[in-house]
Image (cartoon, rainbow, N blue to C red; front, side):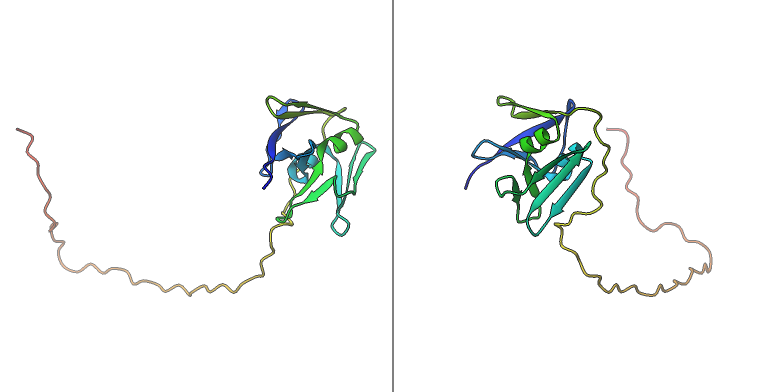
Length: 162
């Protein structure tokens, strides 16, 4: 089993949190997941699942990744792309701090405001199931009869003197 080195991605001075971290491959390239790291860099991301080709656009510039060395699909549905290739094709610059294991990205112009994807296509879809909801039964109210009785449970009394 090959152990990958996990790296932190910093964009505009802010660390990008991700449930799927970026990592360095054995050949020295940094791969980052499309969701959410690469989507923070781009205005538009298109994924062709048949050819596993990824097209990323920002400010009229385009990064097309189609080779198996540029795009890696995990069994859980997470797609990783070569981060340096994407950033350079979109007009940005990348630097790597090997001691702290931090990849710093600088992009020209303002960063696009993107929201998270509404669903994760890697999650299996669940078919609707029947839900049994029992009919509520009304409970009869308590009827007070007779005179109230004193409490029958003994209350322990601890003397305050020694």
